[in-house]
Amino acid sequence: MQLPKTDNTCRFPSPLRIAIGKGRGFAESVSLMEMPDTPAFKSFMNGDVPVFHDTTCSLTVVTVRSRDLCWMLEQGHIDVAIGSSIWFREYGLSSLSCLQPLPMQQCRLSLIAPSVILPQHIHTICTKFTSVAQRYIAAHNMNARIIPMEGTHETALYLHIADAIIDVIETGRTIRRMGFCELDTITTLQHEIWTRKTDMAAQELFMSHLKQPVC
Image 1 (cartoon, rainbow, N blue to C red):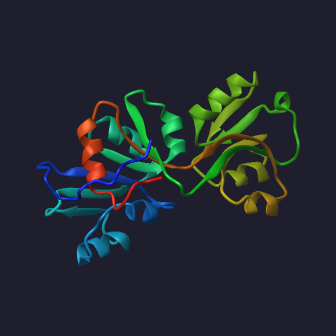
Image 2 (image 1 turned 120 degrees about the vertical axis):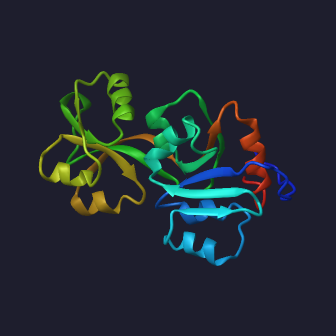
Image 3 (image 1 turned 180 degrees about the vertical axis):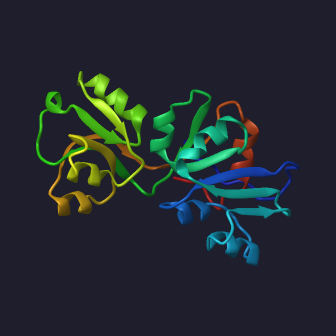
């Protein structure tokens, strides 16, 4: 679906609350929207404050951890979430809908091990994407236990905490430097715009703030 360009006249009485995941893709996500060139906005973009509110256009933009986007959107704390597709796959909330994939920050989620190993010989997998891992294990009839770990999963392989890890690969440089093997690509990942399925008003509001159509 392509979001059409619309008149950016601020005609909506209620603030549109947009949350954008921290880190990779943050600046690109903000650049999709018409934003004022003000000290408050510059302070937000510099990371000095996590919230920017524009009373003129009735718009609030916040930055949060990417893993918090889904529950914040589902619970109605925000109206639009922009971030990596991995977290929407991880939580799989049926009340949410992808409004638009974005042509940036494309990477992949992969199964990685110190060396080539058959799936039936993998008994432990370290990852922070436990739901995705559980679905992968079930789909491949593996008898593996998941070890939750928040980050730096390559360390788990080096210390022999797990037989394999499931982690995001952007360039692959780290695993190549450490001599690890990418056994399987589980899914490709990208940044996406999400709303609640029934919240047509939020979708219209968001489109009114776009600089141009998102292809």
